[in-house]
Length: 131
Image (cartoon, rainbow, N blue to C red):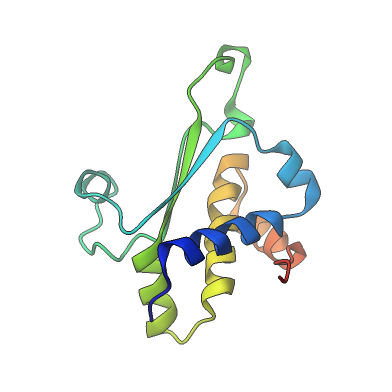
């Protein structure tokens, strides 16, 4: 399965637009990146051997842990990795758009400091807009 970087980025944008409005409104000081794969340093830091073993990554200070000292901080980052997501979708016969949405919700959930259960509830409330 192969989707161009351009189409993949469009699907990430659609997944972000599908988040419930209160969450979209609350996201600030976060830079989103779509990359083919995580780099070697990231894999080593995360202790992951398989370059396709990481679908997404949030780096930063979760919203709930921020204090007044956070003002002026560099943006947090959310990375989505195209090739691992495409490989996972292909291997498990998953809908790529749904998997992209799931990874976006998971990483945005880390930004908010949510538990896995809370992320699941957000996923159920999310709707990916159609074209």
